[in-house]
Image 1 (cartoon, rainbow, N blue to C red):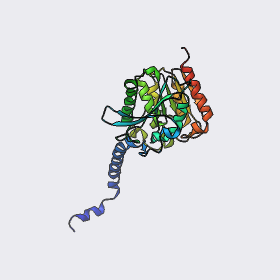
Image 2: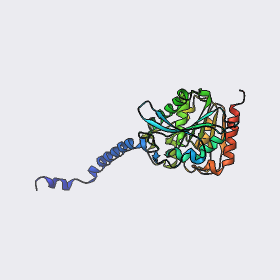
Image 3: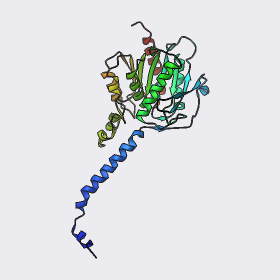
Length: 289
């Protein structure tokens, strides 16, 4: 029997706490490795193109500073004197699908007279790479640079627009550039706040840091450009209180567009209010200051 009989007298709880500590450490390490890709659910298949919505467009390839190539569409605004004429909307979509998932929004922007650049983040659609918070920020800078250097636009001709997670990307870019305006639609104060509100029992502070979160409120702190916050109290994914907090904390000129409907389709469920709100905001940008 050797010395194995000694262990008969050692209670199991002697090993319990160290085992739990090791398990917790392994779980935390796994989370830290896994969490950078957690918010993203990309789709590779392009389900439709602007041509399917009777819009002219160009397919664009945008190189990033770290060697990836983004797939994007550039959609000219509808001819005429819409309130968006002479302005370009740089649109950052949400955390799932790809640019083909947001064509109904593109139609609205197009009909308002806006030129639209819709890039796919790395790992989405036909873009190379794998998505991460830092990666989307690099992608945003690349799309901005493309508008400045290829389309030869001035910063005051560009409106940055982010929907849902794209609002975090948009706010990051706006804080580092000087666009004409910023639109945040169904956007949060931070991913930390979204998860904490829904899962207060999780050790959220251990999971998120500056490399795995978008601190939108911090990005807005130094901005004074016109801001439009679009949100619905019916939003089931990003609480209305988070969008409202962005609006209330902003020190620059601002407007709040309150919609009805869900997170993904509120802009369609309350389409008339959405279109009128965007139109009024665009008109305000062209008034003498």
